[in-house]
View 1 (cartoon, helix red, strand yellow):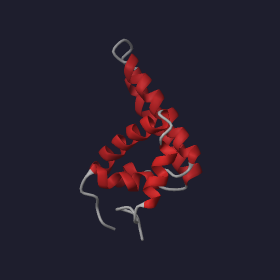
View 2 (view 1 turned 135 degrees about the vertical axis):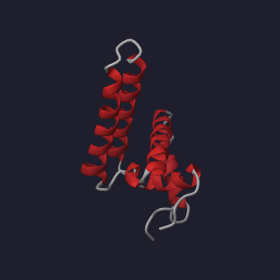
View 3 (view 1 turned 90 degrees about the vertical axis):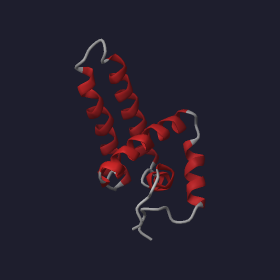
Length: 117
């Protein structure tokens, strides 16, 4: 397994780990809730503690119950940071209706870095 050297190299692997639509929808809900918690945390600081629970709780349910894989964020510090960035990029693409096309685009590429060939 080749380690990605940049987020752009990591992105196709991230997408490959989020092929199930229900998993992606759960990520979207969790990320939305986490952003909401962070938005209100200046006014109600305990909300900041709920952000990771909401974000990762929904995402992990998606991975374990629907995607049937391990979250990409479990691959170390770099993978954790890139996965968080990937979550935000995926959230934006889902919000704009672009994620299905992105999956097709990534599918057209060769085997993503980090994937077992």
